[in-house]
Image (cartoon, rainbow over all chains, first blue to last red; front, side, top):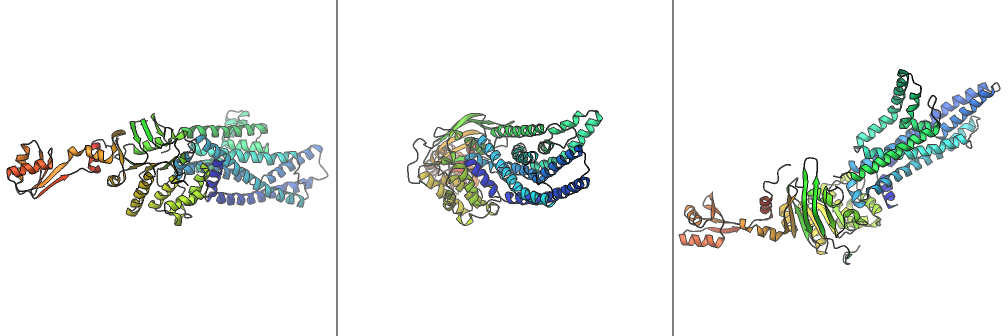
Amino acid sequence: MNLIRSEVLKVRTTNVWWLFGLGAMVMLGLALLFNAINADMLINGGKELDGKVSPEQAELLSAQAELVAAYLYTSGQYFGLLFILLLGIIMVTNEFHHQTATVTFLTTPRRTAVVVAKFATASLFAFLLWAITTAINIPVTMAFLSARGADHLLGDRAVVQAILLNLLAYLLWGILGVGFGVLIRSQIAATVIAVVLYLIGTTAAQVLFLLLSQWLDAEWILELQVIVPSIASQLMITGTELPGSPPQWVGAVVLIAYAVLAGLIGVLTLRRRDIA
Amino acid sequence: MSNGQPRPAAHDGRIVVSGLTKQYRNVRAVDELSFTVEPGRVTGFLGPNGAGKTTTLRMLLNLVTPTAGTATFGGHRYVDLPDPIRHVGAVLEASSAHKGRSGRNHLRVICAAAGLPKQRADEVLDLVGLTPAATRKFKGYSLGMRQRLGIATAMLGDPQVLVLDEPANGLDPEGIHWLREFLKGLANQGRTVLVSSHLLSEMQLLADDVVIIAAGKLVRQGPVDRVVGQMSQVARVRVTTPDAEQLAQALQAQNAVVEPQGGGVLLISGVDAPTVGRAALTAGVELHELTTERPDLEQVFLQLTAGKADIR
């Protein structure tokens, strides 16, 4: 507990928490706006069809409504996850960038305990960001949907699941960040690589897998996209992104596997490393 | 915290280094190094650049894993000490704090990790005279202030043992004087103080004992006086005389080594001052100066580490 208090204090006594917090709030605002415009178009589209839908179309529409609501309730996630990933990275790379690793490991020579405390602290901040964004998303979404004459769907199983899986995603990306920071000690390199992988890597991987599957004429290769962490994350939360996508739980398993791997490698590397 | 109270008996504060070795890929940075550091004394840890001082200190503190050998504080390895900063305080590099964090917050982070009350941060800031800069960010600190913050960090746990790597770096003369009195005071309280430095004149003023290493190996260990005294055979006699040539001949007859310096000055080794005086009297040579040049720590150090200070 002492170590977690110390790690929280480390984050709180630098600029990073409010800079990231501010960034996450701005991105949340933009995401809510974007999702609302999207939802508006879908709801209007649904209204035009009103009264003359077949049962199949009705089912499709209700699934679409759930999806729209889930997106709205988890607004800000795309950049929120990135901020949490970066926070995890910075929590580790700061120690080397500012040479505080020496003092940290003098105070706590059991290095595993330090890494575990960092995982816990990153998760704590991940939970906080999830709680804040969700606390904003729920009233805004409910107000928006009822103003548009749509059901708010908050009690809906799929929507509740999306909100909870959103939390799981935040926690796992925090852990991934800490593990990534241990592997790449240079703060600038770790941050840049993470941002590039997160923002561009997803699209690049999608294109790559598409080309591969066409070249080899094999549909199943597309399903392998799930090994890319950000795609696994998307699959886990929405469950409907990939064509012929694997079941939702596969995304969760892949992401958890990455987090566990990051954790193990992080602990083992840092235990053996000479701090000079 | 307790300054006058007796220290825990289980922990006598003696540092024992035994067979410590660190092999890097191409370089044996530290080579079967063994020495002890006694409580109640200031021990200077000396060596040319690259001799392995910093590596040794980092192995002591579990930051660098030794290839072989052990280092213990009162019989315990650093990693086995419960709440180690309550037993051992260390100052390793001046720049080890987050640039954007204030000095006080830097200390509070450590207090939190070690389970120390956060008021302790203000106490040690006061101890090193940094209270006016407590809330200033670390990036605004001068090198001297950074060293003081490092010492404050080491004192947080009121430790029995202090390990300092080049703490005088960046201090002005006043700061060096303060540091000297501070460390001597700690030793007088019965604490163990191990301090590495390359400032030999400063060490002669500060240290009771010295451990001299070169090329990763122990060269000499012991009280400063004795280490310097053991080298008194290298003491030279300096004379000034108008009849330098005549005196040189008389001394060489007694197997003395004479180095003429010009201007009537001779540097004589192998014989002591009374022998030189007697020789001058016998030869009827007039003397204007007769002094014994005792070696200081610096000369001893240079002599002991000569040829071993190469870049490895």
